[in-house]
Image (tube, rainbow, N blue to C red; front, side, top):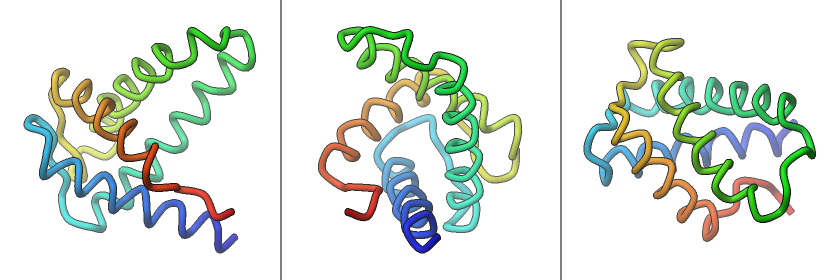
Length: 109
């Protein structure tokens, strides 16, 4: 339970950081980032359930990138006051979040 809370807090902080770097992405404060992080996690989980292990190892990187961009873009319609993003902003945010996630772990080990 504590690990999940830490993961959402770190994800929200990364989302806030990315919103300062990426044009076309606007997050409404830490509370908005936390709500958006929860929605993005739920949407990502649903997409992961849909694809399962059907994707090859080589395809996971590109599908993960595109899926993250689509999930970030769709999250603005679920929580309209918390996050606002353009299509280019979603693509750039997906790229930056992927890079940041490679350095900042979002899971407790």
